[in-house]
Image 1: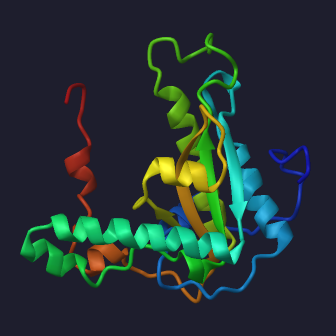
Image 2: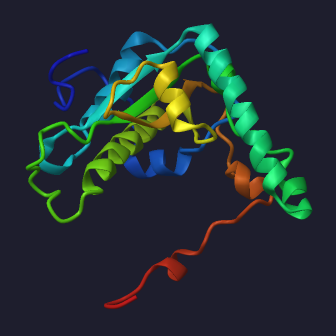
Length: 219
């Protein structure tokens, strides 16, 4: 990957406004084609993630690219178990709503990108983290958002898998202490992007109106 990934003079990029990318972005599960992503496209997506702002310029993220089919299958089996446990915890009406919802495309995408967070990067005296420790974790999440929007601009789907036990994934990928895996992202080419997010289409939960989320002066 080029060293100057945040320079506008790097690889040619798709012409898509950030607003279009935000509207196109979906949590993809069922639409992956399994077709490999070109190396230059993957570089641009990871480069966008690496351009995220970070507290104290610590850049506390790393990206583990997983393509091994055995690892993908092993992790998918683990996630399936977590899904069953969640389904069993639901009241009957919510379970019926949840049953048809696909929660991952681990094997179908053909690639996972695991984003990690290293709180120790930069030492203890981090400019900007002194009073709000979570700013380090927030920085890694900003890298995820950059990755997701860049992927949308490249017509590449991303699905965030959160049905897993963190110690299990840590051991599976040999992630050293104190680094934490904070997201498994299924990343791959898609047949289409759904116009309506899955959780809305299946009736799990709708989107709040913007007016309900905006407060003036005080909450």
